[in-house]
Length: 482
Image 1 (tube, helix red, strand yellow):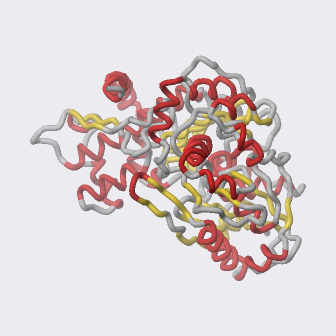
Image 2: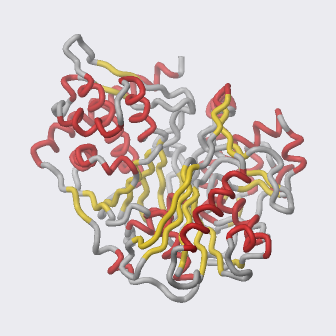
Image 3: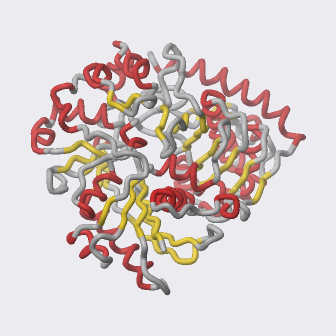
């Protein structure tokens, strides 16, 4: 039995699946996310590692048979600095962190963002490793001096479990890896002034590499020394694999804290003069890539509106039902993140706005305007990523049927919802099974999915709504620069 572990930003979950791809055992526990003054967001590696131990031990204790492997996935981006033994040299800096906001604005103005994009097809934002490392190199160089590796969450956990210093190509894609060659682009590293820190970047492991628990990792998890371990891809591509994305043109919408839109493609070709946003993520399969547009909008905006109105998230559905398409004339731009936006455009100064409000506007109108605007943002991302095939979806946002219907109507296509919500861990297990030479039946694993259909009567209305959204966005981008 393979235990899949998804190390999210605020929640770590361990899952075991049956032969049909449905979870038969699971456990979850929260991770601590420290929001500090000045937009700083940090995590403690030891605390996160403790969550992994907690959920793995709990799941393993309830299984009828032995654990045969451990499959890791988790959050990407950010910066997890460690020494040669895997100990953190400072708290991990989350992908949500905004300390490099002003640096990104400088890079945007002087062409650094475009230069890196031209070389690697990867856009940058304040919470990416390049921005955080460059910030630390100026303001906290001693942390980089003490580090042996500048990596990410999944490889940080892997190092403590196996002793291996490595990184998955999906994580390394952000933003210095040439996806076509799976090698670092030295010019991209030089463009952000980090050539003198080159030794901190670890060469990516070969696809489907199998590692082994060492004594320290085995003692932490209560599992045998030598147990096979896989690490990666990180949660975005893992979710695509777990949801059922298999054919070029297929896409997945992850309506989580942020909104991740991905499309599978068989080519790493891109327009180097296009909008320098999004990224190509390497997958475990040679010659396959995910064109990813991970926007900063998402369910964090829903949490915000719940706090604003003093309501529970369970009330969002009824409020959406209480307002008609178009939200009574209320319109929104959903850019509530302090870090601005990273896809399908990059602008650290991006901010939200509501218009069309009147004394007749109800709470449901404001909630619906926000949800519609996030759906428009998803369409913007998928237009940029090249969605042409089946669309899958996962994440907390699709638990709301009415919001999922809004996504379907705005995108103009049905949405397939996997039968088991743990698609990140599911994807990690699928990759592990392939690596161990015992692949799962992917067609069988996809049979439990349900489909949310498009409501044709709303499609034309939302076509005009999307055009209005694009016009409002274009006007706002001009104002953000003032």
